[in-house]
Length: 161
Image 1 (cartoon, rainbow, N blue to C red):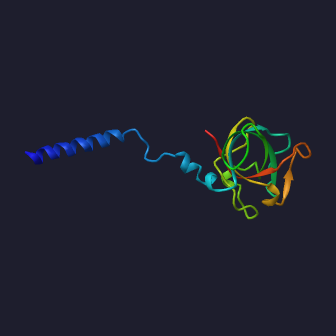
Image 2 (image 1 turned 90 degrees about the horizontal axis):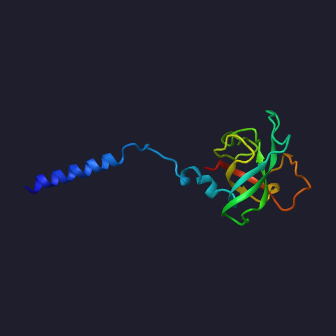
Image 3 (image 1 turned 120 degrees about the vertical axis):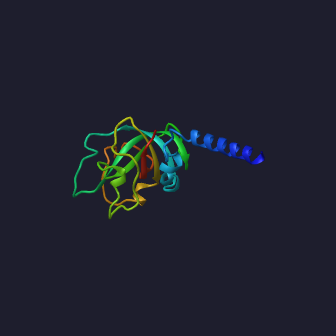
């Protein structure tokens, strides 16, 4: 009698397990999965809104690598020191490329899920300070002489949910 009850209990537990796992994908991205690089690279981690893309800041030139300086408003600071609401300026290498394809021989540590830059969009970024310590090359800075403070270097940029 005990073995029959045990088999029924085992069958019931198995049925509960199978039914509870229905309609769920076998793999889901969690914040930890898609943001693992952001959480380990750079000295500052922020979520920030891209305020604007100045005319001529982003252009495609296959034979010319450059960084464009873009203006952001900080929404949240996850790591490092910045204040919410602060305006920051961030350099992005070859901004016309999806971040997953931006790394090359010159800049090896670069990436992310962001496919294109659009004004008003929210980005989750791993940043370094100062850009001058991490990149020596062509720079398009439409804000030159109009801001104080560091220009950050974007190491990893994801589209924020």
